Image 1 (cartoon, one colour):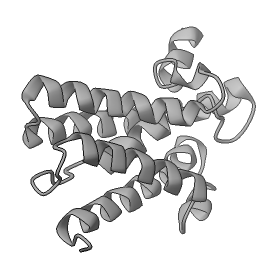
Image 2 (tube, helix red, strand yellow; image 1 turned 90 degrees about the horizontal axis):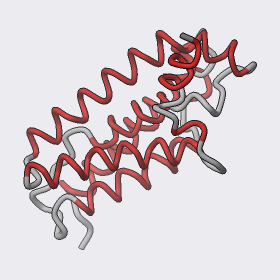
Image 3 (cartoon, one colour; image 1 turned 60 degrees about the vertical axis):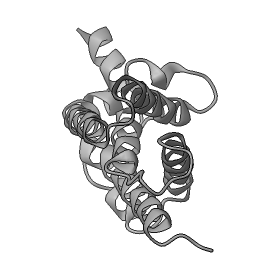
Image 4 (cartoon, rainbow, N blue to C red; image 1 turned 45 degrees about the vertical axis):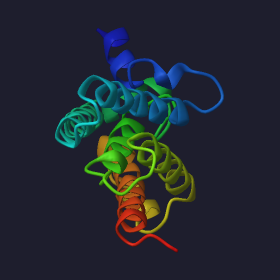
Length: 163
């Protein structure tokens, strides 16, 4: 049972990948986005539904397994627990308008990936304060803020392009 919880908490194993497990977890979500885009010819409704499912599932699992992850890996917000990145990246990709992007779904996927990773690393307010929430909530909340900032930035770039 513990190995199943560790696999789930590690974002289906992305938390065990070398160097930057959070980046690998974000890339896995972008991979899901790309797979759905290819399977549905970039249908925005299917893309939004897929990201909503990933967001809800990863968030619920992170909250449920957060306390276990902290005990199992011996620290608050352990790097191996990447469900938070799954949720945050899905939020960053949720309902990104694609009609005005010159390169179809690839440009918003790349932009949301980069923006999320930057905001996840920089931890803009109120991220640091929310990290202090107990167990899974503290693990999850700062990544949801990063996802929200990334999504907002991508929405602004699409709706109000420069030039």
